[in-house]
View 1 (cartoon, rainbow, N blue to C red):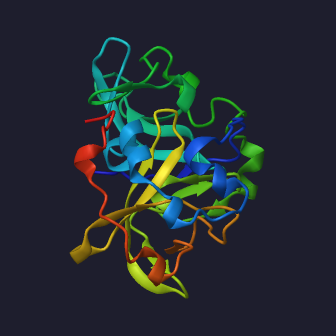
View 2 (cartoon, rainbow, N blue to C red):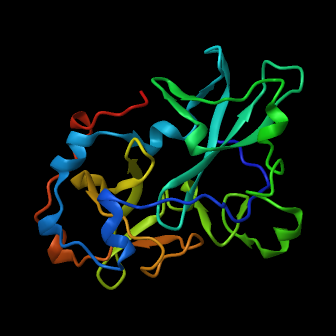
View 3 (cartoon, rainbow, N blue to C red):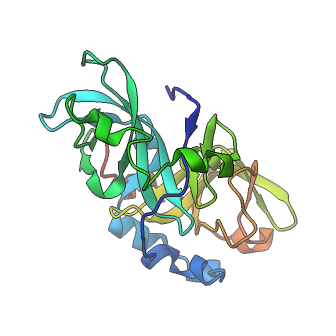
Length: 242
């Protein structure tokens, strides 16, 4: 279960370059669904958001030390860092850590962090002004799920389970999942339409009229454009976290 805390995060100074699946979004262009191919995603495989959220966290000695609580992303839709609760087996008790994505290794049962009982303070939420500064707290914006983020980042729970609409705000389903490449860039967003099954679409966030505080996600397509799509087959998508 996701344990919610009042966590304050400001600008993440992580330089990322968007390539591949999300390149079209950075140019504020919309990819026609006729050019959208599940086969590319099936072939690449990657990381499912539902597997990453609440995934087990392992330390250097392969011992389980906690669980993932949230994922932070940049405006260009790349994973910047994760927030995890760790320390259940340590004398310090449970504590939150913020670990940059480049310091994380994927584990078949979750993620592996370079966090130990001795160095946990180095990964504290306020351990480095590269991520959070006390002076910047006044610049944060309040969003849902008890997490305050700066204007340059958003969190995975800002979009998961949100309603999805097409055309002029017509309800279509809800955001059931997000797919990431092994490098942490968004491959697509999966929308569950209940009776018709899940469908994967390109993700359009910042620059396309979306903000983390919105409760509805606009898919940028009309109803007639999505009528011929086939359901997304999770069985054909190799998840790097089981």
